Each structure stands twice: as C-alpha cells, then as structure tokens.
Image (tube, rainbow, N blue to C red):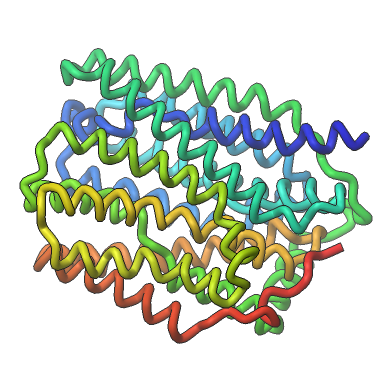
Length: 397
C-alpha cells in the first residue's frame, strides 16, 4: 500500500512534465501572425484565459471535491488536448478565442485539484511536511519541460515557416496526450469523508468561511498575491528589454534556457530556505528577490549585465510557489481543499488580470516605469506582510 501511494507522487511528476512540454512557445506569436491575428487580438487571448479561469475556479474546485481530484485532473488534461488539436487548425480570431476559453476552463480544473491531490497523497503517508520539497520538485519537472521544449522547438522551427509551426503544435498535442494517458494511473487518496456527502453549497460556504475567519491564512494568501512576480508579463517584457539593451539576438533563446534551468534548481530546493534561515527570513528572501531584480532591470541596460539580470530574476521567481503551496495547505482540511484553493486561485486570477492591464498601460509609457511599478508592489508586500511562524500553522492531519 505504501508503494502505491509513493507512486501517486511520481505519476503527478510525469503528468506535470508532459503537460508542460510545449514545443511552440518560442514561436507562438509568429504562428498567430501567420494566421492573420493582430497584436491586439493576440494580447486579448490571455485576458480571455484569465477571465474564464476566474469565473470557473470555484465551480470546478467544488466539482473536484465532489467527484474526486483524479477525475478533475483527467478532465483538465482532456480539455487541454482538445484545445491543442483545435489550435492546429485554427485560422481566425474566433477559433483562437474558443481555444482560450477551453484552456481557461481546463486550467481552472487543474489549478486547485492538482495541488490538493499532491498534498493529500503526502498526508496519507504522514509526509505532509515534505510539501515544499515535493511541490518544488514538481516545479522543476515543469521547468525542465520548458527547457527541452524551447530548445527542440527552436531547432525545428529555425526556418520560421508555417509548416514547422504546425509540426511543433502537433508534437505538443502528442505530449499532452501522453499526460492524459498517465493521469489514468492516479489513485484517489482515501480519506475520512465521502465526496457525495458534502453539498456544493456547503463546500463553498465552508471554504469561504475558512478564508474569512482564518487570519493567518488570509495573511499568507494576501502576501502570495502582492508577492506575485508577474512572470507572464515578465516574459512579455524581457524581449523588448533585450532589444533596448542591444543584446545579440542569439542570446534570446540561450538566456531563457539557462534561466529555466536555474528555475528548476530554485523550485526544487526552495524548501531549504525555511530549513536554513527560518520561516520569517526564508519567505522574505523568496519574495524580495524578484522585486529587487525588477528595480535593477529598470536602471541597467547593458548587453551582458541585462542577460545576467534576466536569468537571475527568472530563476528567483520560482522560489515562491512551493513555499506558499505548503503554507496555504497547512490551514486547509482535505474535505474542501480543492474548493478553497480554487477560491484563492479565483482571487489571484482577477488580481493578475487587472494588474496586467495597469502594467500594460504603464509599459506603454516606459518599460522602466513598468519594472519599477512591479518591483514596488512586490517589495511593499514583502515588508508590510511579514510571515511569522505563528502564521504558517501546522500540517493538517
């Protein structure tokens, strides 16, 4: 029995790797343009994804607590696969928008239940204290997939032809199909509750009540929001930042590969921060680093130093997730874990989407101001919402 439960974590690692193995990310914008989309249409697709996620987070989280996390993960991967298949043939904005809707629903299904499945699998082994380590290692598999996908995709699509783009999308769809197949080997960790005995309304009310009454969880969640490193917007800005810094074009891909590799290490070993310097200092370091690098990028435009700052900034952004994942889950019980996490993800999605609009307006005025703006929010959160041992809580039974 013990071996099966350990295998559940391994299966989750495998799913994460293949589901993140996107071969076409480095040429996605070029593919959109080849299909006739404008920059305004391309940028709006992310807003659709985030908006749909925000709307679908709570319903999908409640459903995950009702039907089980395994089947919710299967649904999420199935939607992801359908989206990639349509993506191959999409040739107009409406079809791409439809794919974005499917992606938003799929991400909503996986956002809470994947983390809940991981924590509950560890908890049944009595190893919930390893959540930071396991979550960090899971993040390293995701980053490894990004590295491999970017390198392979760059080689195959070096001619920048539409046929190459389509082939990369087909390869990505195949990888997602593998993740879907692997997901059937998951098992639902046995618990002391039955999914069908809790009504959706009660699951939501209990989850919302927990967030409203648990001040320590509120503090952790609020800091995780303010400390969000805006990594998606960072990935949008780093290319014009390199252009302004007169970085040689060959380094755009190389720098991202190196940064992703260091991101793997940062995610995998993030748990060592608390172990070596304590809760308060550990989370402070994890939160502050991206903010500091944003400030430095606002004032340093140099062919070499800009590359180094980008690499270090990207790597440091991978420190937070495993730590916050552990601290949030310590305050949540199994019966509505996916629901609570989905409520949190809903608030996070709304916040990131709204901030994206503001950040975009600031960036239109000056890229420097955008970096300073993002860095200021992060530093403000880190200094005003310090996390102490009493806010972390104990791992749930």
